[in-house]
Length: 258
Image (tube, rainbow, N blue to C red; front, top):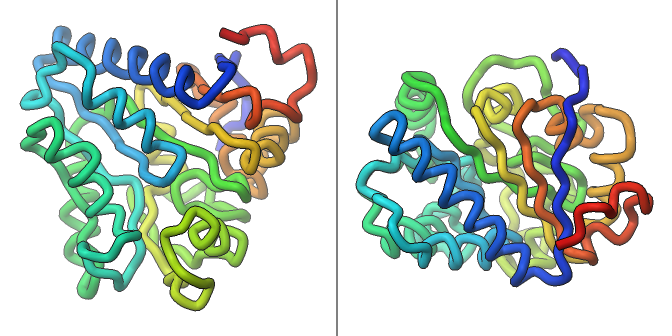
């Protein structure tokens, strides 16, 4: 993959609430613009603890025609039912789909037989460009469930991935599972190249526990050992941090404090 870097827009806020409100306003404007220009918006939605306040703010934003939005799912654990507290299908249904009345969505139902799901969802994803991808950054620098060393080369839209221990421990730390043994070892993840095909990327990464990964991804080398570092090569990415997640960045980057 070409690793030529673009000018990354990093915006830092005093707290997670301010970050979420600003990111939601940005996302709403991008969705509305896509609908105005093309009569629909195709989005990729992220999950996890870091996205909760952002999605809460976005779903309350006025004047978004959610019936004109088509949503794709970033990743999901293999083998857990939709009723499981950690299910990302459940997360998106409760925090986005049912709250907005969104009608067109593609959830990754990979509880058992997943090959047909990946084929159908991948074909739908590839059928037309994606307008906006919402993403986060893992404590190990992962982008979606692409843990280090991430595959920067595959053109497959979705991959079966092995979750590393740091990623699995993060899920325990966030309260989705009681212990490490309960966390699935395999998941489906949208590929790095597929995420990078989105016309715009909005990355939301609050909290102190993300500070090391944020520094590695935005001040270290662009590397598959820090998967989210690839965002620095995208021409239209905005990163939303709070002062805690940005606390290890060098001072010259702290010029966008809002």
